[in-house]
Image 1 (cartoon, rainbow, N blue to C red):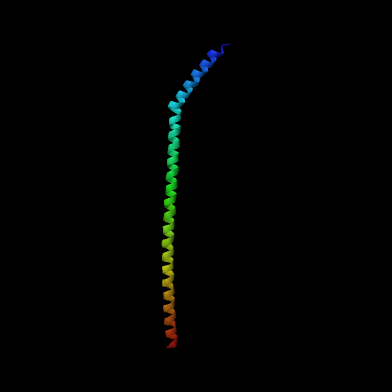
Image 2 (image 1 turned 60 degrees about the horizontal axis):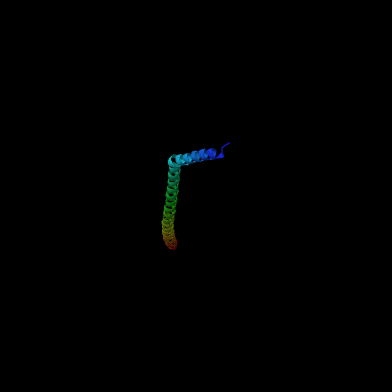
Length: 89
């Protein structure tokens, strides 16, 4: 058995295998990983924008709610004043 010829043949087969993988297998894997990284980054950015938008909407809601409470309180006070005027007469 000639180990040198076997080792030489396996080395050539391995080099060919690595060359084929480097040329045809590795680029699609790298492209898929880059695309996935981009989608994840875009998703995180969209989530941050949605969170900021939610905070703005919550602030606007709180402001409108407080305004409505003040208006309701004023209307109740006016109604109580009118009721007390009607009772006095």
